[in-house]
Image (cartoon, rainbow, N blue to C red):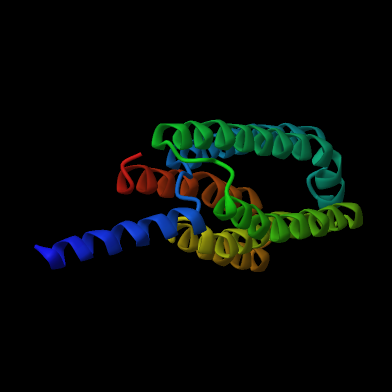
Length: 206
């Protein structure tokens, strides 16, 4: 009985340390919703591409891509805004449900480790956009997003690391296969998000 009490206390101490060093209120449903938003964005982007192809000379690839860049950029911004907003709302609700603070050393470390690769990727993607290197924008988004997830996985659920590795792999493959960026966007930001979001939701009983 005494040993059981010691093990119970050690387990409680370990759980307390994990809660203080890691952010474990990340909502799996926010990943699902981010995937849904990405699929919606891909749908509208595909319609835009088809509409543009019917109006422009498709033999001029640069003119075709440059003509719809502002609209595609707007779609990406809307998807990003909806994803971040939904993630914040659902994660804060998850924190309140568990009775845990949403802002503590673990969440600060998570945010820092996510922000550095994401900000770097955002700047790099903007440079690609200004230089007209449109075929590399989606690969760069996938790679830097994957790096951010791998970096942040040390301070939240370890499953996030695998999602990050898959995103990086998709980005590298996409860079080698130009012309299929929208397909890789759909897989990376849409399907993978939904798949891993459901895994996290049911695995951690959220």
